[in-house]
Length: 184
Image (cartoon, rainbow, N blue to C red; front, top):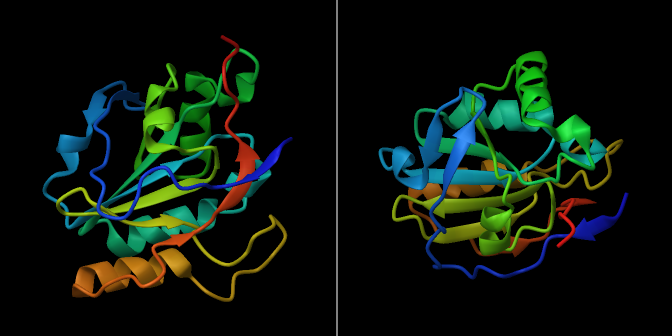
């Protein structure tokens, strides 16, 4: 496991790169599918990473709290050939076991992760209704899988977004396993 901290590629105000990805519901999803929401939270994630596993409760909490206003989209960009736990079939199993209600999409070409500049799992990006980046970074301040969060960073930032307030710290790096890139 290679541990990485998220890095800046997209800057505040940059428009979210569009995508057309297959979801675990066997339907294609694009960024425009979420235009009715006041924002979109895109989380690069996978099935096997202990840092993602530790955040599943937080992902589900975000969905329960904001699903009527903020679209939450999980994207798995890992190479499933070398990491079969992250295969599309295992994405479906994980989503069912962990009761994901948000869309969980596969980026098997890894092009979307590269466009966003995602490098670790989880690597969350929060966009406003105009699809402009307003925050890139951590879900909360529990930085290791065994840590307990004392600050819910993403909830606080989504609440600011919904109130029309500026998010002062627009980058607060997440930490997790490296995205498992395909060999060229």
